[in-house]
Length: 403
Image (cartoon, rainbow, N blue to C red; front, side, top):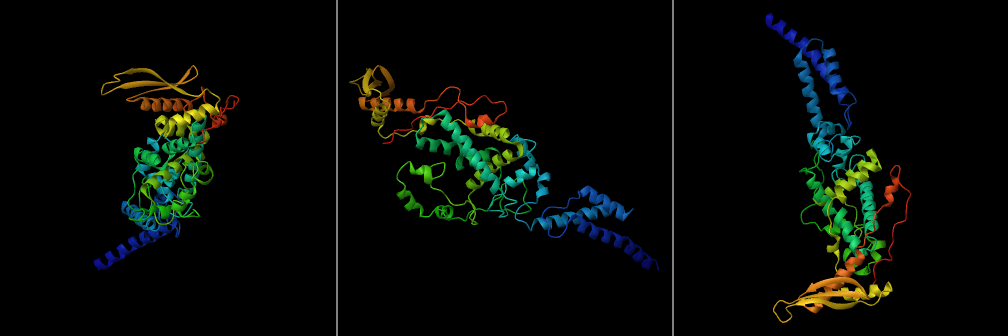
C-alpha cells in the first residue's frame, strides 16, 4: 500500500514539472528562429518558478538543462553563431577593448565582422557589406594622404605605397597583431570572437579561383596591358588585375579572410560612430605604420630620366661634376659626384667609380624631385570636420616623366 502511494505521489510531482519545462521550451525557443526569443533567461526562470510553485531548486536546474541542450542543438543548425551569443563571448569583449573601439559599436556588429562570406552566405549575417564599405574608406583615405603629401610621386610608386598601407598582406598582418584567432571550421557553436571562414582546398589554383570576373584569361590580360596608364582604367587601386569575388563558394585563404575582417571593422566603425571615429581609427592603425617611400623607387636609367625631367621643366641640362675623390689608384677608390643644373646642385652621390657615382647622384636628384612634400598638408576629408578652416586648393603636379 505504501509503495502504491509513493508512486502516485511521485507522478503528481513530476507531471507539473514536465508540463512546465515543455511550456518553457516553447516560449524561449520558438521553432525555426535563428535569434533567441526576446525574453531574457532571468524572466524565463522567474516564469518557470511561478508555474512550478514550491517545487524547489531542482525544477530550476531542470529548466536550465533543457534550455542549454536545446540551445546547443539549435546552434548546430546554423553556419555562424547566433546574434545574442556575442554578448557572452569573452574573446569578443577582449578584442573590442584591445582595439579601443567606440562604445557605440555593439559587440554583435563586431561578431558579424568576424564571419566571412565563405562561412555564411547569408548577407544579413556575414561581413561582405561591411567589408565593401571599409574597403572604399581605406582606399579613399590612403589615396588622398599620398596625393596631398607627395604630389609628384610616379604612378607605379603610388600603387606600391597603396599596397604597403592597405594591401591584403598588410591587413592580414594587422589582424595577427590584434590577436585575432582563426576557427578550425565555421559553425553555429563556434565562439563569436574567432575569425570564421571556409578554407580553400589544398592544391587549388588561386588565379583561376579569384579571377572569374575578368573577360580574358589572367596571362592573356597581363600581356594585353603594356602601359602604366591602362592600370588606371582596367586595374584595381594597387595596379593589379581586377580579381573576381573573394567569396566564390570554394573557400578563401587565411590572408584574404583576415584582410576582409579588417575592412569590415573599418566599415562598422563608420556606420556606428561616424566619420570622425573612422578617420581617427585610420590614423591610429594605418598612418602610424612607418613606410620609407624612398625605397619604392626603381629607376633603370636615372641619368636619362633626369635629362628628360630638366627638359620638361625648362631647366638647364644636367651636368655631372666631381666634387671630391680619394684613392684613385688604390684598390678601393671613392668618388663623390654632383649633378648640377646651371649653378644649382640637384643631387650628390658617391661610388667606387665615376659611372656609379654619377648614377647615384642622378638617382638622388630624381628622388629629391619626386619626394617633394608641401608644408601644412591638408586633405579633402578634413573639410568634413566641425569648425574646419576654409579650403585652400592643394598643389597638383604635372606628373611623372613618361618615357
